Image 1 (tube, rainbow, N blue to C red):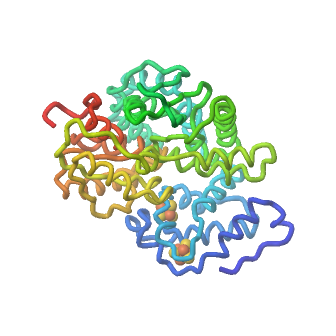
Image 2: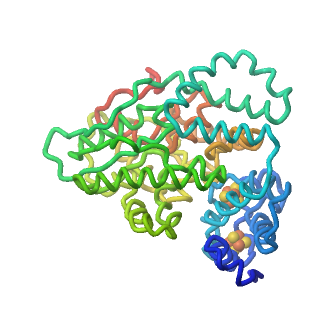
Image 3: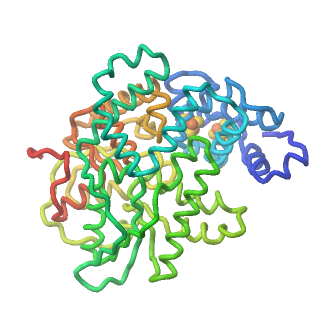
Length: 437
Ligand code: SF4
Ligand code: SF4
């Protein structure tokens, strides 16, 4: 694609990077058929190629974002299915990330929109605030039917309420900094990201990971001070705050590397894993952090990616259940991890079934299911219809956002892959599995 940036514009490293990405697009349109919003809405401006043109025009002309750009970029799920489909290697992720922060800097959203985004950006990344918000949610629930009458903001509040019930399966006690030592001497030492939302909604996921790692003779450390990976704020376009969170985590993990060494940073939420693996890029121009960030990114591993390279313990009780494996976009498109989770589940005795249209997003996408509830609901229902075609007893996924999204529309247990692996290897029955399975 030809671009038309001035030399002065290209002095800005972010613009120069965007220009480089734009030039790799040959506008072939292979990406359009895999884009969930194009599949649903059929509008070229809601396709990757259409969005690329909108971003190009906005950046080249150096003009503030307008309503059209904001509407179509906001509708993008950042699912990255377009990157898997693109034959030219267009890094749409970095392009749309830049567009989102450009919008944040140049466009004034309506007040209700700004307030909701500020609320989400303030509460979700902080475990204690999020716990408080969930505790208060039942007070607002009786009025749920009235929300849609309040227009767009009301529909977004209704979406928040719809996603809140999963909180009933939480355990409140926060873990403090600690090291979990296996029974035998550990040769491998890893840090496990606790992060934010998942640790509040489903603390059992990280507990299952710790147990499983311990069974393998791996020491797990939960360093104090680590928190949200920054992805939530990053996808809201709040770049400065997102990078501050990234730097905090980098400092904490770097200190741990200095202290006793780390062989990996294990992540059980694939949305966070994609973000941490991108720290090196995001902080490439920061002299104090570029090297440290690249080192942290290289150490980050999804829990299934980490386990895939290891010899697993003997099964306690092989599970012969049918599992529909939902491939989270951040895992299959963002990190290109596809076979490992399914193979691990198969090794644990589960009958794993692929879901038709597996490349399409379930509509979760960070805060997307709150901010764009109509599209998110349509995608969720489409995903659940496809899941039902596999007649599963259990749905497995590797990302808390997908788990919450799917669980809000089905009574079939939706569990994290590591919870099922831990259960099959002698761990406790995961909360929400049900007694008959
Ligand atoms: S598939 Fe790649 S090269 Fe083709 S239009 Fe989409 S982004 Fe551009
Ligand atoms: S990231 Fe997903 S929603 Fe956004 S343009 Fe690409 S395929 Fe479409």
